[in-house]
Image 1 (cartoon, one colour):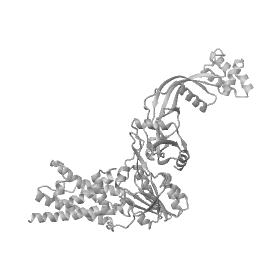
Image 2 (tube, one colour):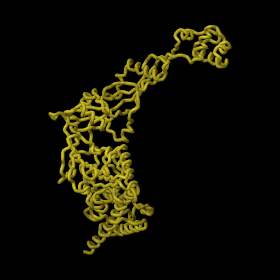
Image 3 (tube, helix red, strand yellow):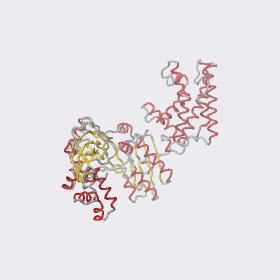
Image 4 (cartoon, rainbow, N blue to C red):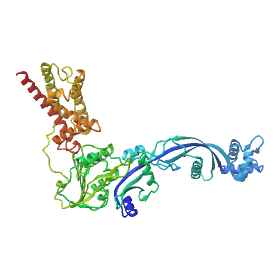
Length: 579
């Protein structure tokens, strides 16, 4: 990134840099099947044998002249016959043999497969090479562009280009070869690959913006007009599904002295780890604008090995992409390995911050920037300010201590005892509901899949917690939904059941939302708000993976809330029955 930044500053000294975005441009991979005449020389022994046969020497004489075993010479003669250059019956050279003597070359018609690459924006065709595969692009979360040209349109592939590429391949494979294209038979499509470039948004003194493309520190001029064409046909160049939510919900900085830092600045620069800072503290919002890659994580670990201190606070109510989640979980693994790495999380968005050596830092007040493009109306702009005169790291990063968390279950026996109490109480409540309403809430008075909970595990990790919430939700919430559908009642759990048993419905809804947060990538706005409120209540607004015993605490809260709600609902029913 620094190479690109320095190059842009040098090329456009009077421009303001708005954004630098790493993008994968499409490279269409194809294989051209063609017929080609290849001209080549014979192996040395065959070459000399043919020429000496032409001088009427026999195999024994040739063997003595070349100091080679006669059997090898005889084999060469057989090979010459196979190549239609010598006739054993007449012991004479054929026309092809005499032609070879004249030219020192012979020709063969071959079916040749030529791998080629077609630039998806410009249509430029060249000999194929390896780029970034679609799978690898996804694994590194590289934003890839759709091609301008039609992938299946092969009309731009013509003989002169293929002839030139054929010559390149022949020259690379064997300098003795020569070849001539006879016919292109077909073109086969291969998976699209991508070449990484940097799209830079710059703004002149009159506030006019433009896009330029760089290959590391070299400007690629031919892409300037192609980006305009791409926008006109609807290709998304700047796509960020999280920036709107971030801007709407971010907690703004208050009472902080901010000094404008009037140039783009990579607030997640891993170069911090290579300099002589004793500590680095980050606040990183979990949005697509901030990517943590393998290089960043590797440099972080090297810094930790130097016994330097790092604190990272992640903010946001969801992981925007699988790649970002995977990278953050790698950092969580590092925190379990190194005591000098401290992690925090809060579901409320905050601006990105870095603090160095406890005495100065930067904040990125990221915003949306208006572009003059039809289908790409905005991009992200990074607005950097220097932080001065802050009091404490905890205050600046918002690490104030929250409410005391519930004490988690101690052991498996305690967990199984609580489950048994819930099952027994649920069956008793089902009978009471049947008597009062004529309809219970269990499956014919039985706790669905009760046997599964005999092997229940403490939720010490994400997997065991996910399995626990999934199984319990199926035995309770999903069963209630199914009972409602059988009776033809729409939204039974959220309406009738909630109206009749509000305390129990609230406790079960906590289970439902937590289960959905584990089983689904995204929650809708209504469920997301509930999820946020439950986390604020149960874990002071933190994801469980960032808390000591976080999953176990949620398991404890879910079970105790359900048990207490069953007992309270049973009491309420008895009170109503006695009036």
